[in-house]
Length: 140
Image (cartoon, rainbow, N blue to C red; front, side, top):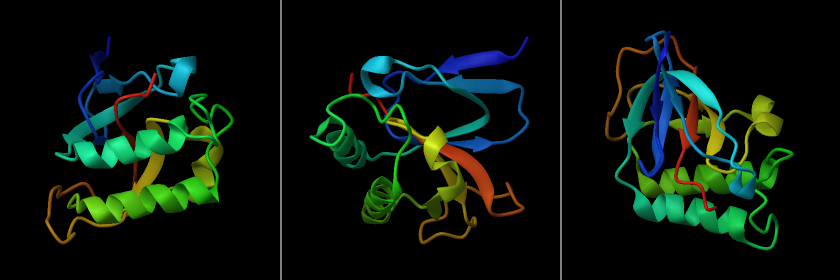
């Protein structure tokens, strides 16, 4: 049986897809309260302001708390990447544009582009780009 860690209230973080035998889940997708899972390694970020900005996008008039159940769009992806750049998280990330329909509030598929960001946070997970999920506390 695979171990499962619930990230409720863990703040903004990155799940790096990696064979560890540990799966992570979070309550996501606004009021829908989805519980997606991914096996890997969780890297927390000290970035409360960043996840509050992300929640504001999904609570605002575009989604009204629905959590983007049908997926996010290019505009959301651009905003998320802007928040990540502004937050200086130490991991060069890009929203995985091939998985926009599988992404929603508090569970966004990303690509880790390299391990040598401006403030190196992770190393040894290549080859890059490597898949992961950006997750944060759900607005619900």
